[in-house]
Image 1 (tube, rainbow, N blue to C red):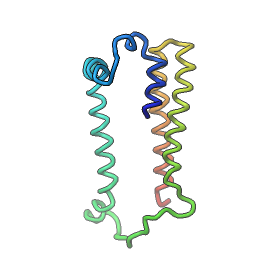
Image 2: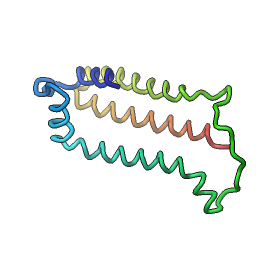
Image 3: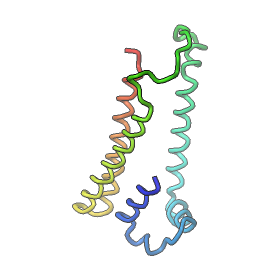
Image 4: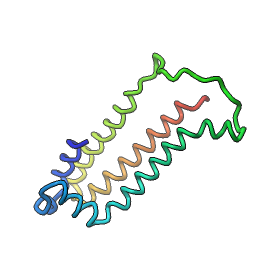
Length: 139
């Protein structure tokens, strides 16, 4: 993640690279100074809530008697399941976004590239999330 951040910083920092010379200055000027802490906090809370809901959801449905109780299933991955594959998919999305964003930055400028990076990353993450949910569903 640090290497990806460094790569993005080198591509898109512009005048920020002359003003920021360390982690403290980055947090003070970029995260707090521009109000970036608000969407980061919202992202942290929402993703945390999704994670908690996914963990509690089966027990909640059983408690509300919305589904039948099932016997406990073995949680070890089977031969066709690979936990690490999900991580590689995310890395692939990140790499494709950086490469396409750099190409778009040369064509449209930094602001356009930033918008493109956000749109592509969000669209790909949502698409992969839907595919993952489909594979996890019993049907």
